[in-house]
Length: 368
Ligand SMILES: C[S@@+](CC[C@H](N)C(=O)[O-])C[C@H]1O[C@@H](n2cnc3c(N)ncnc32)[C@H](O)[C@@H]1O
Image: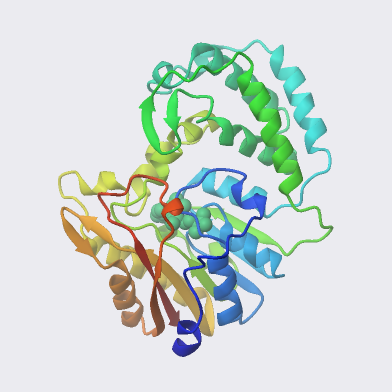
């Protein structure tokens, strides 16, 4: 297996999948779809089901679906789960009509601005008129709460525009700037996003199913997964690198989720490395061992798992996360059947990661 994997090109310099569905919502450190695609082709799927225990924006799940496989994804972040859910669902033809209905109701809705007074620093990040319009949209979307096939895409559309209409410079730069947001921009951007969504989602009559579980992987049980799986493909979060909770903090506040809960459970979040009793690489080793133990329970015998992971820098020391995953896998009696490095495209670096020095990542392939 090692030689088969080694002969493949993992840098994908000339390839760039253009499927717009993978761009319906910003997400940090997402896979280029070629990675799960090539892994599925090279490793095969023992039964019909692929698991991604850190599914993020659902790239693995969507690629699996396109190839005719069922999938199961787990992620702690509710925004990740919402995007994954929508990406793997069939588009409802009425989405654009419903979007217009939402807009016509939102514009005339009187809302109580005090209902969002609990969101910290709201006035710093959002102009008053913008706050009002977001609230109007949110209320109008809520009327579709019981129709999840419409409610979820509408929420993704709202979530995806929130940084653009805020005072935040960009998705990757946390500075408030004057952006000259025009009156009504919230509504017009929402409509444009619904349009893109409606044209990118799948309209095929039947799609292989995808089950999304919004949970901390370390408390997820085989019963939650619910089935045996034939292949695992994932890129875990790793220490002191990306901060998914922070990236989506205001999205979570606006959509009624709790970002501070996500922060407290997020593997690798920088906050855990800058406090008393701060986390160490050993924490990451145990977190990966916990994840691998769950994989051991649900993966079919001889099934493969692929982990795509970069290095970390913690308090000046480089940490080889791939080696920690390898160690945990061997301890659980998985065979390590392949390990190779790939250069990371600079466009994938969604944050300034100079503190983490991430230029290369490793693909570790294990077998049960
Ligand atoms: C590298 S990203 C995955 C990106 C994904 N491959 C994609 O293409 O979008 C890692 C993910 O791990 C999630 N995560 C962090 N801690 C977690 C935990 N304790 N349980 C489950 N997921 C967690 C983060 O929310 C993030 O979405």
